[in-house]
Length: 270
Picture (spheres, rainbow, N blue to C red):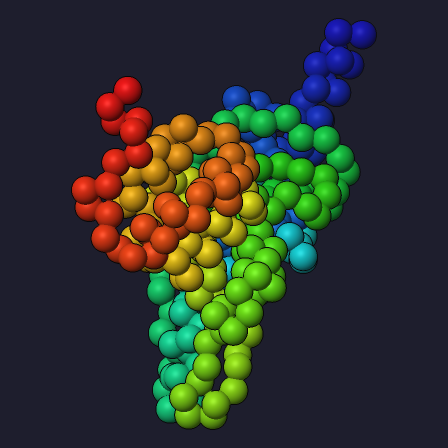
């Protein structure tokens, strides 16, 4: 009986390969979905582990897009991974195409540490979400659905366009037409700066950041009242946006005037 068990174990190892004897985690039958939070279009990405396995995705993801399609099925092993990815500036690309020039792609390489993680679901049901951030760092997560975007630039832009009207649009001087796509990319660029400076991810927070940057004053966050809000709302989703929306009109006018180098809010003298 013991001999039969030993033989069965060896057969199992032979069928499953060396992974069964390894302490490194192995993830098989995965789908992969990219989430792009950079201000550029994400054209493609390749994930590599130390054992020669590869997984990939992309497909010209606009800023803030992703989770709409997945590529299946992949195997990855270990906790250390290399991600090679390419982005391009869509506004530059349009000019290059008009000039019959090659689109300039920007290649990036990022190292990702992903601790051993428990997964559940059959082949193709487990999705590796790959999150690309404005500072070029990349994060992995497992999920079993198509959701999970962490920054919604589209919702920010829709709110901004609705609230600001013509102030939100970009007019092309050559064709005298309004281009929503260009306006959206501008919103994404500004919102990505909100993440870079203050790690803002909440839609309400980013709406206010974009509005104040593009409509009130690009340097709005230098005002002491705003600096106080930044400190007091750090790490609290939605709190920055709510506080900015509640700023008194007198403070908003000071910010708009760009003459507040010596303005104090009273908090400094508590």
